[in-house]
Image (cartoon, rainbow, N blue to C red; front, side, top):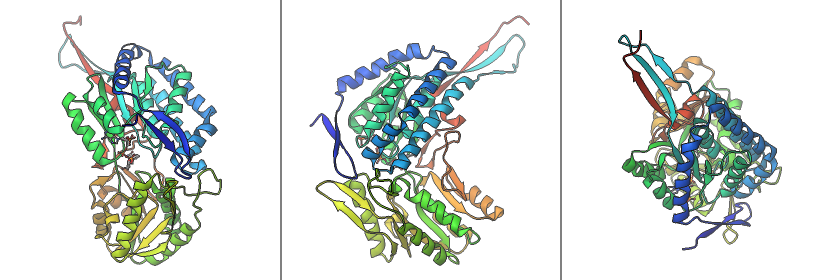
Length: 465
Ligand code: NAP
């Protein structure tokens, strides 16, 4: 088996770099080094860690243009989105540079004289992170920043499609003064590194963003050493458009949540559920707007939608379109493909499907591509039932100007992230994560640092009163 792999530009098929996979020996050595480094890093004070994180963020911003270009080349997303992702990535570092200084403990009023009860937060230890290709910068900093801020050491394995952005970010962390063995990158196949991480007694926490099947495997394997896990897994987001919704707003926000990153985000709209009285107007407007999106190489400034990541994705997405059409769906926009199998690039034009029913695969399988299926409802409870009819529970969206409908939807949708008249709810200072099979734990916000901390309780007795 080859011990190297080629990183390719998904828009052109061009080879960008050849990366050596670390041998098992090297990976185990890096894990041991990360564990040794923890013994000193955990003793640094919070203000020192905060300064180092801020320096890291500043350096990333200074190299923003080149990082964004690398990201567009390896991932395919439009350059404007890559620039936005660099900002999004550093927003997590900035947030946790501040949170490092606020890891307060507490003193609990005692139940007995001469006793004091004290609670402190301590870093959990060496963290093993595995990240996906769709947000190569932000998915890494969303984990690394709280881990380092808490006093943990960190070792990351990026997806083989997009390792270059992560490698660059780790180099910049070292340039900022964060010791080399405190934040490390390993290269290799996910299943190999996943096993080495979960089996290692040195790694105290696994944090993973990726597909639900891989997440389930990592949870299972982490049980052997009772590791803490944070899992950001798949999604199948519904968008409910109520009878009274501002249709133009709903169309614009659906475009944002559906077609960003060519539909390859875990919080992407995967089902659009529209009240039957407005479905015609909504679908027409959405299709007209969708047809204006420019498909192409992300480095071209005119491009709105880049390629999908690889052949496997292309086949899954086009199979879902074919299945829907075979079962009676109508194509209102898109469903054209610009493909070169030899050069290995795959473009799918943003697609709108109507007359979609529950029997179609697209209503149940994560699409991870630029296809919006539209279905209808009569009563609000029917919309909620369709929306919740999935093992996923990551993000949901709804559009209504009626506060009673909005409040009812918020309370009855089984989702961890909800956008009300908002297709872009994510930010560094809010909790991000899913219910049901979409994951365990939250990233971002004050919640996002808790998984990197152990609570230690001290009871002191026999004190002078
Ligand atoms: P994936 O196939 O699960 O891969 C994600 C990462 O896991 C890659 O680094 C991959 O490494 C590694 N991996 C693969 N098999 C593994 C195994 N058996 N053990 C350990 N690691 C393994 O997912 P993907 O296709 O790259 O990413 C898309 C998925 O991520 C979607 O389901 C999406 O919804 C989800 N996602 C979720 C969030 C969230 O916050 N909830 C955010 C973004 C994406 P290789 O390099 O070997 O492939």
